[in-house]
Length: 326
Image (cartoon, rainbow, N blue to C red; front, side, top):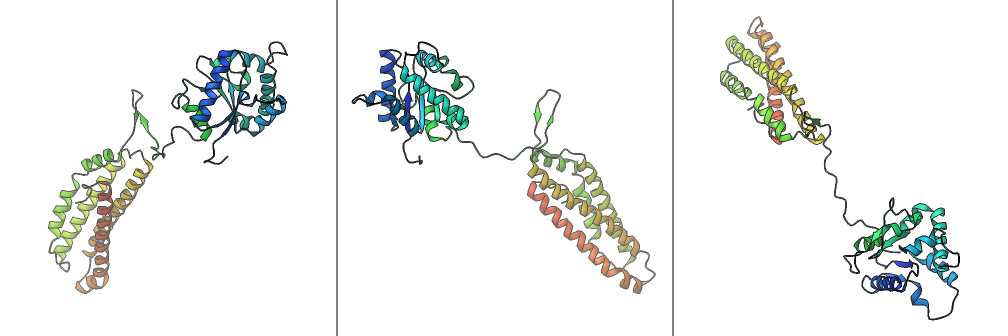
């Protein structure tokens, strides 16, 4: 059956009473006329003499779906109770349905649909159809809304489409009250900005101290060395404080935070190397020794610090961290 084709449906039921037969007629008529289902049942084939056993076999084989109408008589006969001559047609159909279920339970479970019409009970579904462990279809009224669940079953598509899965929250914690705590990126960033609030003033002070330095002078190199040491100490302290903060819950947020933290640690190491380099320069024996041995390496060290500052600033801005560096 293609998506555009109406499903072929066979209705298996018992002739409990004239009222029940009329109820089933109304149901099958609605399926065929109003819902457009290719529905079949015995009362539309009574115009000529035929072998009803062969007819039932043919209908059961051709059907995309078999609707078993719950009723006391159908349950009794399908389960082998009552006189053997009573309701031979429904007994015969139920026997084939049971045999098919035994042969291929998954496929036939999807094909054989127990239906409970208005005024009937779930307890009237034959036991082998699993009234309470498998899906059954209650028709509240003969309208499209009243048999929506059954019509949806014909399509094979759920009534409610499963939404796209959101990002996995990852490890989460539980407080003393048993409440699940989800750590947001916004909360984490706010705490980083708070614990790192002392860093920007240190940068401003050292930038002012190093402005216009003449690196060829020993006094300027002392100033630069002290500035790099102050920056290194500030960033080292900030790294320790940040390491104590609980990271955000979402894995993608933690990844972005980890990238920023790695860049920040590299900046810490670079400022430490710069401070060490400047201390070494102070020991230069004379102008020539300083120029040859230290000047170019010092320039490269300063460039590395500058490059890492840009990297940390860029990664921080992407997640909202503004106080780790100015």
